[in-house]
Length: 456
Image (cartoon, rainbow, N blue to C red; front, side, top):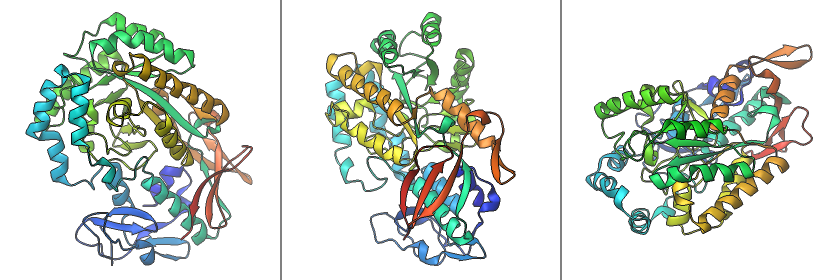
């Protein structure tokens, strides 16, 4: 269990000792760890079927002795339950993917106008604002859990600070990526204009292309995107909403999807409609995936990974979708401001996380949504300069996160040094306690970055 905390912060495992004590309960359920909701098996506490009920606090069953933290639950299980969305009811999960209504809708979806589609989708998500978990508009349950455990580790070991490798290159405060899912011929035809818009603000993005049925994908179209410094990824196979309906069909389709990935030189994948089954990701021959929302209240498949950091699902790196999609913002919430996006950006930056956007070329061809998108880009460009936000294409995030995972801190006299590929861009940081809060400080930075974790 220590390894999960050490992997998140990337510090020497010798600095922390975390074990599980007691016999775990038979069933998985909800409980608390301080203020954070957890889902899994717990020793000595009754768990609940829903997060809305009164939840027992596992902090009361947590003990420390000789620098070791003894938890009444399995940290690996709890974190994986969130990252892989295992807390979602199996019946709800399967209904979202296999229901007759869903199949019927996606069979006619390409022929429906946006006003008809948004009316249907508003009815479907009409009670979205009554969902209490994951937390809207950004859920950082996993990140808060790791930060609490880092604070407990500092206290139990009696240390002033613990060194770790900072999350982003060159000491960047956070990271932001812009991605474009191309759904229709109209969207494909607008891609050149969209690249012009992105370039005006000095932001490179990725384009997720549907290989079959939706529109013609010519070599010149792909070459133009690539030659201009943008990235190409594979989006599903034909965008019919059926990729994950059954295992045999999934394997048939992923064989074709993987072939398109090799043909296009694409390292990233995204499923249409953000449908996903993380336990099937091992059949995808991609370096990274971008199909898992942080919180999915407004998506057809509810759930969310409850973290704003990249994480590995087997060998695939997941870059979670951490902000609301443009379609949901414009057509479900009828909001053409960037206020919600700004609120999400602020919440993600408090955790130094990944700020990721999906903006479809199909939905910004007209003046009003295009102006909103340009306002967003102007805001991101300002944040890049004022707040030191790193703004790469997704493939660069994948390369960095894999490099960081392989880096190691090694003693260097009275200090530390980083070893491993990419170390020249890595920065040493320190976690310390101040007035009962966890404080993160990047070595050489002018000011500390404080996630404001309050000790219970």
